[in-house]
Image (cartoon, rainbow, N blue to C red; front, side, top):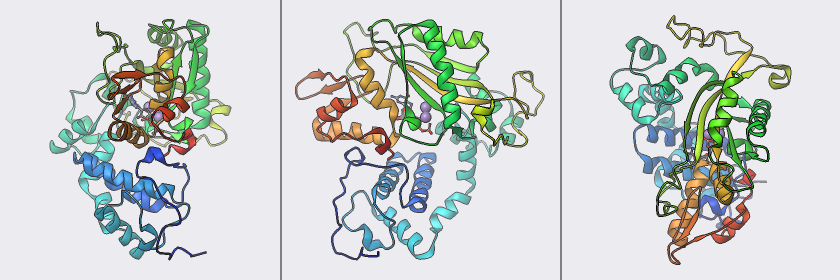
Length: 390
Ligand code: GTP
Ligand code: MN
Ligand code: MN
């Protein structure tokens, strides 16, 4: 069984993640967890290049058909830099990496983890708070003031929003969104995207893409969906952004990076806990130390145990003609998306966004009505969603 001491790898591994199949379950979880922790810490310290390097290294390990036992197993593999190899070597030899463990225990990593865990708080804000001496949610609350509406919601529902969303809960949300969409625009179609489309068992949120086969019918749809949901008391928070893609007088704007201008809604749903949704394990997170203060928002704020939970939901509305691009762009994983765009730009002189594919050499947009067509236009083998877990 340990026949891995051959000189050359038994198969070649392509260097872009979008050229490879990356399953959800793989054989090198402890190594990838370590590398992804370092990737996250690099993000926390504003070192994006280093972060992506660690993530690419981790993604390569996810594609391997068996567990890495010795450094020799890694011969010929792409994307494994000196630093990643050093970490892997340490783990193979000692079981743990000292760098990973000291990072995990570091004051900055721990604080940034908690603070960026608040919905609406990105690395920049968390970093600023860290520099101001804030280390915990308690610190943040005693410091008081200056939270925007999104961050306040993030704090109010912190425990729920940091508890994984199950498939059953995603399904229940899908039923609700489906009902809302059918009520306000018959014939509209709704598709589950994000991690659940890739086969994940749990997620940090639930992502949906909505469209209508008759182009134009989808315009202005989001506010209608949102007000239907609000009337039913199903939303704890929402922020809707209108479509800005067609606002330019000169027609569609050439995509510059991954900026996306769809009509979209970042929301927090109030999901009833029913037996179907919870199964038998209706464990709540114990005390909710975030929300037991006595501020003015008390009524809205969750006090456990309760018969509902907060769930982050992303809704995106796409015109039918852009649906394939939107679907590909919102299915993820984040690294897979990043690699697709890098492939398009570096290998094909094209720009890929969640709206269009633009061919810079031919100076024109390339149409596609399915994900399969987009992969083909990019000169890539089709990778199904379940194999995009880079
Ligand atoms: P979990 O939600 O953590 O379970 O995983 P996920 O893969 O579903 O992550 P997430 O919901 O954050 O993102 C889903 C997909 O939507 C990813 O491919 C992201 O790249 C994409 N996405 C998220 N936010 C944006 C955005 O603002 N613009 C665009 N174009 N894509 C986004
Ligand atoms: Mn998601
Ligand atoms: Mn999302």
